[in-house]
Image (cartoon, rainbow, N blue to C red; front, top):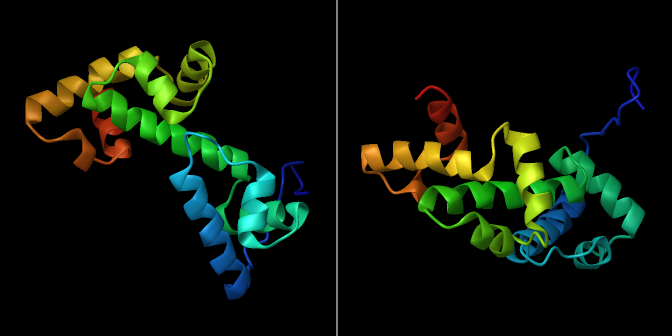
Length: 146
């Protein structure tokens, strides 16, 4: 633990373990809508659950579940910017509850999925650039200032 009581991640991960973690991360990216379990990811990396979770956090800076949540929200932002409905996006990225998705989206981004969509669609349509080629951090920054 750190002095402030939060988790401390050791940034040293061996190259062999890192290759295994990258395989697990690839599985997580490919199956993000389903949300592979910690056991599945640990098996893919050929590590025990506990060791996998510690090494994952050391390599990627956050626990696997937070990584999955961030990945799903990034995909949701892209789909919303492309014009998909909030309900479609919720199901597409793997959330089972529209309420959970909307509240998590609002808590993490400071606006509802519908508000995000309205703001980003304005930027994307006015500039004539496909949303899939614009990083979401760029969209977020410029939609706050529109």
